[in-house]
Amino acid sequence: MHLDISAVDIVWGWVNGREWDYKIGSVLVVRKDGRDVTPQQVEAHAKFCYDVIEPAVNDQNNLDALEDYFSGRGDCTAEEVARGKNEMAKALMCRAKFEEFFEKFRGEKLADGDGTWEHAVSPYEM
Image 1 (cartoon, rainbow, N blue to C red):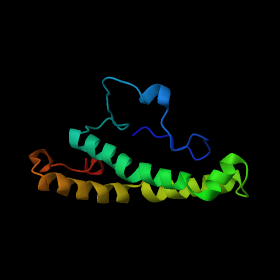
Image 2 (tube, helix red, strand yellow):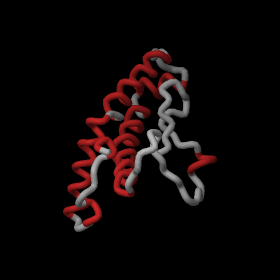
Image 3 (cartoon, one colour):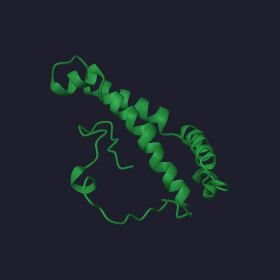
Image 4 (tube, helix red, strand yellow):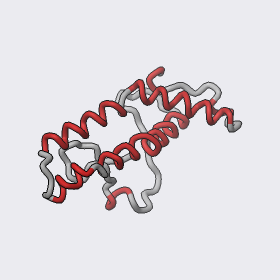
């Protein structure tokens, strides 16, 4: 949930290891708008980041053009790299994609017998 997704940052798609790769203890999750957030919404958000965002970021990082750019061997400009990253981020990090994922994930949780998801709603519906 804490990937660096700044398109112009060389560590794009990575987690700050000094802060997040070690035992971090408790985490407080709050919404910017101050509304309530449920455990199911936090779980779905984390799973969305892990199952959807992280693999897409890794795929983008594995493109030959990006590898060539970051190693200094390629013809790809910094602007082209940033544009590709921004396009990928906009396509995946949007309400429609999250809500589609949320409903599928909710269905899986219910099918697995987790009754706490029976009345779970997307954070966009609160």
